[in-house]
Structure formats: structure tokens, C-alpha cells
Length: 569
Image (tube, helix red, strand yellow):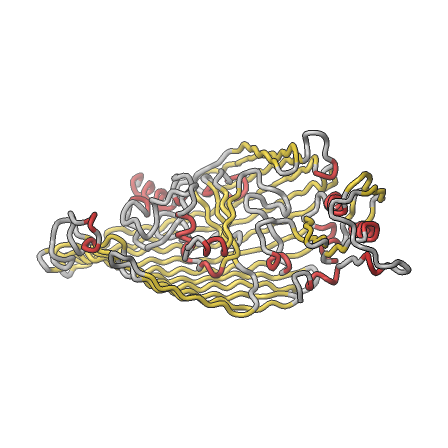
């Protein structure tokens, strides 16, 4: 089957007209006069196909129930199709004389579009609406071609992301001033901190990592993703308080046909960092659904000070980059229950262990005078969702998430070859959330359909810190913290396409307005409303200007709140 074979059910074949000889297809740039009345989109596309003797391929369910505006003027066949598609989630492209109609999102592969997945641009909750903030999209293939092996490396390569914070190559400064105990990689847009940069997995939140309130993005194997979207602009009006610096959305592959495997072996020329990585991803897809399961295993040895010339002034056994072992599992699937009801689910599991040697003075080894730190991090989440298609083109979605992240650390402190202290800090995070949202068309404007997205939800985050110390055989509690935060929220977002290519005027090819408002009630902290207004203006096709204004709100993280409570009591 060729590239367009799976779309053939919606094809318009101009050459099959009764009583007509088979003429040559109209040239791609040939214009003709059009006079079509307002009608069903299906009928308008067929009329364009017949008149232009062009093949137009689309999914019947994608145009079902949609209205096409009147078509009057002189256009090429492609321009005529683009005009009747204005205000929809569909876009047209031309290949080898054939016009293919698909869902609107340029960064998504044809395979993703034919899977039936609903595409939402990160930065907006309205399907088909543009983001008024720049969106950086990195696909799985692009990341692999750049030599990246995990999402931690991908975000550290982004200019918008501060790479010196919470990542495995930094031994201090992460985790809110603590050592990066879990060996994680957290997004830190514009250097505002991991607790100000929201990371989503297929559009939903997961549990925080350790105490910094960041999200460990490296827990998702690269083989499991379709793409990574990053908006390095305040997004509190759309996603909430912890998106003050921006948001990243890891879009998983919903279905895979067959099995893909890969293996990687590597080492540093100066020694250390002997790395092995094995991944496998497989799945299946069928007419009403599909699934994907991915597994990834990584093991990397440490780099010690003796292996680098620039660390000759420290103890040879000191760890420069810690050893690390990680296993990750990800599953994503979708299934249509009826024509209007579908079910989706995402799940993930990660286990990582790290070890490092810390020596504060010149010594022969860690076990002589120093510390040996070993940590184990376990994280998992499950996110089911029920979606439905309502009359008049509205979509509704009910989703929930339960996620946990547990980090256990063992720090053995040695002096004169004897263990004098053993520190046992443990960090546990839990997330529970539920959200109900709806999105659809309100009315028709000159540039297309005005669309609205509304929703409400509730989430609960819990942090537990249990830190103990064993000295001289006596165990004592050094820190005991338990902090819970409940957040209720509601949001609305409105998309107004005033001018689109179909009704363009001189110096205005496109003019769209987008407004968003989110209200959050952080129990025991504050209630706040965060607005945002944006505009997309295109004077000519191919040139686009974006502008927006908004307010953002940053709540203190759970550990900060817990420490404040302790100081005030």
C-alpha cells in the first residue's frame, strides 16, 4: 500500500466521472473561476475535485457535519481547498498532483495523523488554534540524528533551558540547594528553577522529583516519544502556577506497528563513562485503536578525578560524574468504545540507582576520609482518560492521574577509615488529579470558527521527608516533614479567527486573537486569576508576527511551605 492508500476511502476521483474521457490533471498552478454556494464540506471538496479534475483525498469522518463557506473568486485547486477548509482543524497539502487533507499540525508525521490522534498544539487547549508564544518542537528522529540518547540531553541542548541546574552532570546546586540526590534531569527554562517550569507527559502532570518540585524528564525513554514541545514563555493562564517560566509537553507514541530495537555502546577516550543502552519498543494498531510499549535500560560507569587532567588538584577517587543505572518502561494506548466515545491510557515506571564518592580533603579514598553516597529513585504514574464527541462538533474529556516518586539515599561518612555517620534521607512525592474539559465551536467569524475551551479540575500533591541519622549505633530523626497541597482550578480559552487566507485583505493574510483565563485556589495559600491575551498577525503568507500579554503566578514549593510552617510554630 502506498503512502495514501489508507486514505482512499475518502478519495475524490475526477477521472471517474460518467461520460467523460480521462483528461490530464489540471496543472498545479492553473487558476480558474469558482462559484460555489455554502454547502457541506464533503460536497464542496467533491465539487472542487470534479471541476479541477484533481484527486482530493480525505477521511470522511474528518469532514462529516462540517459546513464550507461560499467559494467565489479565482483560485488554483489547492487554494480553493484551503479556502473551504478555513476555520477547521484540517489543512491541505499537495503531493505529486494529489491534494491530501489532514489534521493541522505541521510537526507531526503522516503516520501520527492517520492514527486518529487528536492533535493539540502545546500552549493552547483549543484544537487547531495556533500558540501565540513560540513553540520549539523536537521530534524523536531529530533528537536521534543529533546524537541524543535521552530527553535529559535534549533539554540541555535547548538554548532556552538552563543546563547547569538539576542534571546528572552537576553534583551540587540542584534539589533546592542540595546535591542532585536522584540523578534526575529537570527542565529549567530561563534559569527560573525546575519548580517554575512545568513538564507534562501527554498533556498531564506527574509526581514531583525529590524536594525541588521538578519533574524528571529523563524517566521517559527517547524511543517512546513522538515529539517534545517546549514553550519558553509564561503559561500560567493555560496550565497553572508552576508554568511561570514555560511548559514542555512530552508527546508519547500512541501506537506502533511491529517492533523496533536499538543498542548503544560508548566510552570516553580519557577513561570512565563506559555506557551501554538497550531499548525496545513495540505495539500494534487496528481500526479502532492501538498501543505502544517501550522499555529502555542504561548503565554508565563513573568518571573519577584521576581520569581527568583538570581535576588533578582534588583527591583521585572523587567522583566527577556519578555512575548510574536506569530502567524505564512506558505504555500508551487508545481504543474507541463507540463512534463517539473513546478511552486512552498512559503509564510509566522508572527505577534509577546512582553512586558517587565525595572527598572534602586530599585523601587516599572515600572509605578513608570522605563520603559514599548511593541513591535509588522509583517513580511511576498511570493516567486514564475518557473522551467523547458531542453534537455540534464539541469534544469532552475526563482524565485522571495517580503518580508517585520515591527517592531513598544512603550516605556513609568515613573518618580515618571508620564509618562514623550514616545519613538516611528519604523523599516521597504523590500526585492525585482529576480534570474535566470541553472544546468546540461557538459561531462562525469571517476567518473561520470561533472556538472555546473550558474546564475544571482538582489536584493534590503530597511531600514526605523522613531523614534519619545513625551515629555510634544510635538512630535519630534529623528531619520529618509532611506537606500536602490541594488545588482547585477552572479555566477558559477563546479563539477568534478574524481573518484567514480565504478572506484575506491587502496586508492582512491572517489575524487571529486568543484569550485565556485561569482561576486557581491553592488551599491555605491564596486564590488567584491569571489572564493572557495574544495575537497572531500575518501580513503575507509565510511571514507571521506573534504578540501576547499575560500574568503569571508562582506558588512556593512544598518544601518551602513546610520549612515556613516549622519556623512559625
